[in-house]
Length: 368
Image (tube, helix red, strand yellow):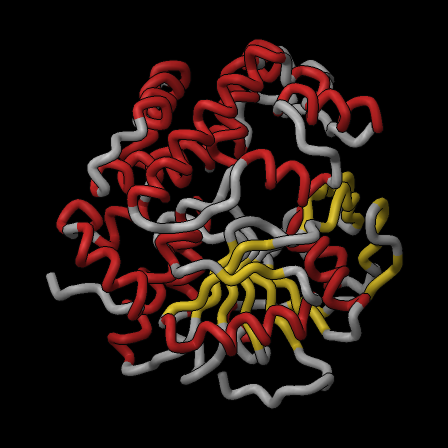
């Protein structure tokens, strides 16, 4: 990947300034690396840029001093670039970064959405630039940002699924992530497996759909405490649908039970029981206090829709996922399927399954 191996300090430019970006920056700093944060709007890093430190609380404690970047050009000077913002912001950030990324410069996407790696690599190919993009199935941490300089870190995940495009860079991508974040990564078969590895959309569908009035009323409510047996069964059925699609494609992905066990360190049981355990321990978290939540606005167009599209290509329709897209669109009076800018940009509708599989392996889209 063009980076020397060893223990040298690396500078990681993080595109994003939300809770996960802050938690990721704090974790990198705690391991002796240097993080640089870029807020595309500038608002998210204003106080850090003015000299205030970043404070991490919870699963990670400490006071840190990450740098800030004023532009995509500045961010791209880092050794490694990491994308850590909602899926609906990925295309604009890729567009901003693509003119400045260097040959061989590693990019990490935390977490990957809607075949965005293919879009970025296609932009770079037009410049004659090639580099490895390592994609994660989920984020390093779950976190909240109670104020502009604090990350409340709820958990640091013990296992994260990962793949690198092109597949020839797989071992280097794994080694880089281990160097930066420790031995917590599970290498999957490729980008297509990672695209089916993000459980947030299906889980958030069950939680948000079944607690929508709480969100609309702005209530304070326990998320873990409200994954009741009926909600848990819906989440398990959604998971079975996703896992079956992966199986039809010959791919191995983590189940919802493994996800909860490895992410939150609770014994394997039914999803309702695992959430009740989280609630009893006081780590079940609070559900969204607004309908304008990423649980819907990100996870429906950039998550549920993607799983449904892959299911269609695989000849294994994701009936519940597709229903989720339609139901949330009806609830919000929006066409969430039309809001995914990345699928339209890569022209997913024109690709056969074999063409998509080739693109996910080599990182090259077929010509239009």
